[in-house]
Length: 157
Image 1: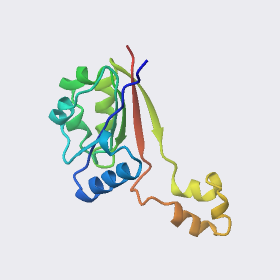
Image 2: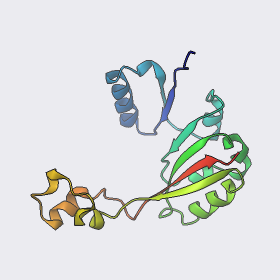
Image 3: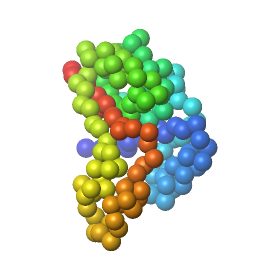
């Protein structure tokens, strides 16, 4: 049985991010399977030659409601999606996506851990043992404006 070679389609509006993606693909000997581009909208997604099953990972900085719309839910019906939710940009993103995908997907919410909790030893790595609480908090902070969450959407078919 021949296992098909997976392809990765990676998009970013920052040229440096795409350059780094290409470099990593080259280093990992998968450059022939990584296709890169800049801006990704629904037309871009629809142009990708998906097989029956796909995983779409989205971190689009508040563009979620424009990328994942009610009219395009059927397009995503067979795909797993991992979407970073930017409710701090638009507080209605979570509720809108829940409404759109409730009939086609089961939704699991994954939340980040605050840098304060991380510093208080939920991330007790040996490399951090010599640092005090304030230094660990600074080292572990991602500089995000709030606790982040992701929706993992699995087709309910």
